[in-house]
Image (cartoon, rainbow, N blue to C red; front, side, top):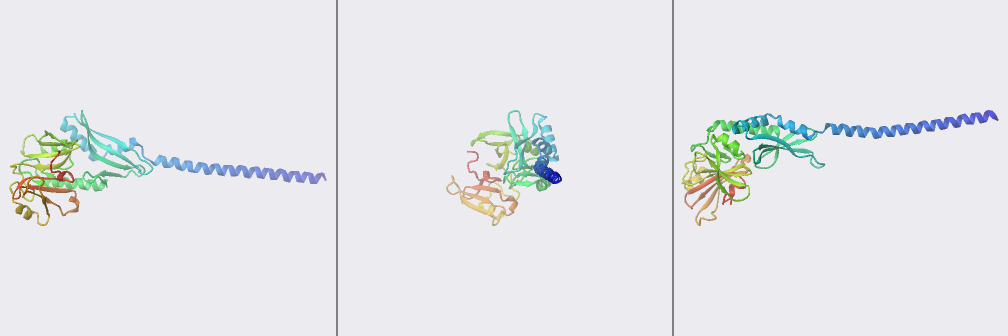
Amino acid sequence: MMNKVKRLTVLFSGAVACALFLAICSERVSQAGDILPQFQLHQMKANKLSADSVAQKIWKLPEVQQKAKQIGDLSHHAVSLGVRVSEKPTANQPYYIVQVYESHPDRIVTIWYLRVHNKTGAIAVQEYTTGEYIPLNEWRKQLQTKASVKVNQQAKLTKESKVAIDGIGPIRVGMTVSEASVAAGTKLVSTGYSGAPGCFYFRPQNSPKDVAFMVIGDRIARVDIWRNSPVTTISGARIGDTEERIKSLYPGRIQVSQHSYVPKGHYLTFVPKDPSDKNYRIVFETDGKRVTEYRAGKLPEVQYIEGCS
């Protein structure tokens, strides 16, 4: 009898020990299961970029460094270049938005907005005329194209400079006033005329005369050619040309509409064929017979019939 009791006791003790062992094992496995996702979450967080590292990443771009030197030299270091994170990633938008800007004593002027993916670090740059973000490599190709065009143009702004759909001579739509002054070789100064908030006109301090730039948010949006200016477009259009000549210079690309203030006058609008120029126009104003003034630049500003008013 005693032997049976001993055997039962041993068996019971073994069962209890086994149950305890299984419970402990189960708890360990459960804890391991809890630890694993936490570890993965920690690793995922570690892979994300911080705001400081993103700002440093943008600051070190060759284009940003070159721009910083250019602005510092031009202003004798009265104006500096700055980089700051303006927006942080959210659940729906996994990007940092970074602002590159000129820091003036009384204001800041945005040069570029860049978007940086918070995990991959991929960079895209906001295109000025469309507001869309394009990959960094594509943006760099655009800069190279503009640089090559500039080499083939005059180095300075003169009365011989030609009006293109996106600027005149070395000055391009989208440049800040400071950048345009460097490109022109002459300071751009305010005409003192403004209308709508944030809209101003600037002109070359010296020559050419009767050339002005509409500036929105300190960026050039269009160029206006007024009065008796001898400045022509690349195709040769000028003030004083007949409506027929304008149509012949741009065959099949001119849209005609009624002038808002001149009873017999018209707006002759050149609409480009190249898709890359879809956001630009040249608008010739006429008295019904001849061109009285014209302008070139980006939509919608180039179509403002009263300028900044």
